[in-house]
Amino acid sequence: MKIATFNINNVNRRLANLLHWLQSAKPDIVCLQELKATDREFPLHAIENAGYRAVWRGQKAWNGVAILSRKAAPVLIRTELPGNRDDHEARYIEAAVSGIIIACLYAPNGNPQPGPKFDYKLAWLKRMRAHAAKFVKQDLPVVLAGDYNLAPTALDIYPTRSWDKDALIQPKSRAAFAALLAQGWTDALRTLHPDERVYTFWDYKRNRWQRDAGLRLDHLLLSPQLAPRLAKGGVDRKVRGEEGASDHAPAWIVLR
Image (cartoon, rainbow, N blue to C red; front, side):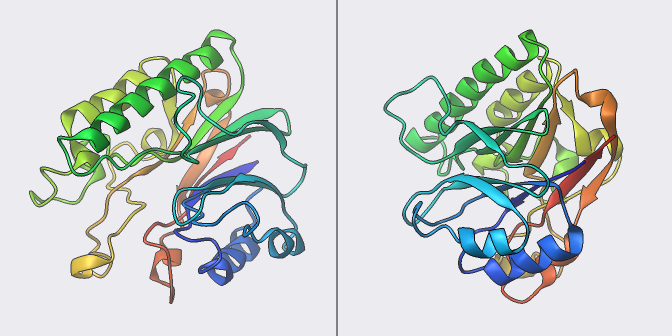
C-alpha cells in the first residue's frame, strides 16, 4: 500500500499537476492540504475520472484538506480536530481506508512569532498530541500524514541562518513534534533516511528550488502497530520542478 501526502497549494489551480502525478505515481491513498477551495469547488469529477474516491473539507481562500483513495472508498470519521469547538479552520480530516485510519492534517504556520498566530500553532499541536495519544492507547493502525509546518531538526532545513526567527524551526515547534514522537509514533521518512537531507518544500522566493534550499515540512507518522510494515519511502522531487508547481513535493511511503 502506497500512501502519500501532498500540499497542493490550490487544488484547482494545480489540478493538471495533481492529475499528472496521480497517473504517474499511482499512490493508493493521498492526503492533500491547502486546497484553497470551498466544499463545492472541490474538483471531485476530475479526481473520480482519475480513479480516486475522496472525502474532503474545504474552506474559502485558504486551508482545506482531503483524503483520496484508489482501491477502496474512504469512510469519513471526522472533519475537525477535537479540543476546541471555536476553531473552524479546515485543517484536519480523518477516514478509515482498507483497515487503516488515515489522518490528514495541515498544521498552522505560526508566523509571525512571537504572537497570537504562534500561540495558535502551539495550541493546535497540543490538541493534535492529545488526539494522537488516543490512537496509541487503543493500539490502532494509524497514519498521521500532512504538512506539519515545522522542520523537526537541523537536518530538515538547508544550512542557513535566514530562517532563525521563523515559526517553522522554533524550539517550541520542534519540541511539540518531539513530544508527539515520544508517544511512540515513527517518523517514516527519517527512519528510512536517517542521515540524509530530505526536503519536501522549497519556497518560491530567492531561487530556493534552483539552489535546493529546502525544508522537510511534510511528514508521515506511523502508529506502533503500523510501523513494522514500513517498507520504503521518499519524495517525488521532480514534481516541484514542473511548470505551475506547488511549492511542496509529494512525500510517500509503502507499507507491506
